[in-house]
Length: 287
Image (cartoon, rainbow, N blue to C red; front, side):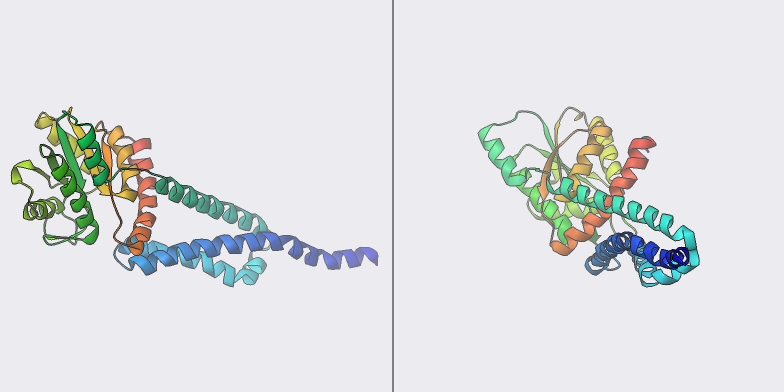
C-alpha cells in the first residue's frame, strides 16, 4: 500500500522537480523574445531578412512556453533533457549578448574634437588620410547616421588642413548612387576641396571598405600614411579588428548614433556582423 502511494506521488514529485527548470526556460525564452521584439519596434522592416529572423525567434521562444503542457505530454521522457539543452543554449546566447553590449559600450574611441585638441598641442608631420565608412543614402542625400559621420570627418579635415579623405561605400540594393559619391557630394557642398577627396565606390561590406581602401592607398603611394577611420561608435571595434587583419591599421574617430532606436537596431545587426566576421574573415580566411 505504501509503495503504491509512493508510485502515485512520483509524477507530482517529478513535476515539482521540473519547476525550477521550467521557470528558467521561461525567463530565458521571454528575455530573448523581448530582445528581438524591441528590434522589430525600432527597426521595422529596414532589414527584412533580420526582421523575419526576429519573428521566427520570437515564435520559437513564445510558442513552447504557451503550449508547454502539451509538449510535456507529447515528448514524454525527452521533455526534460530537451528543455535543459535549449535553456543552456539560450542562456549562452543571452550571456554573449551581455558581453557584446558591454564590450562595445566600453570602447573609448576619440571624436573629432579630441583629435583637434591633439593636433593643436602635438602636431603630427605624417601624411594623414581620413577614411569615412558609408551607410544608407537616399539618392545624394545621406541618412542621418551617415551625415553624423560626415560631420565628424569635416571637423577632422578642418583641424588637419593637409589631410586627404577617402569616402568608401558602394551602391546598395535600395540606393540610386554609390554611397561614396553621395559622401563626396556632401563634403564638397560643405566646403571640402575636391582635391582632398578620394572616392572608393565599390565596397559593400566593412571588410571590403578596408581592403579596397588599402588597394587605393597603395596605388597612390600612401601605404605608410597615418589612417583615421570615421564611423558610428558601435561600428569602430569591428573596424579596428578588420583593419589589423587586412594590414591597414588605423586610429578611430567616433560619430554618435542618431537616436536610441537607431543605436539599438544597429547593435542587434552588429552582433550578427561579428558572427559573420568570425567565420568569413577570421576562421575561413580573408574572403
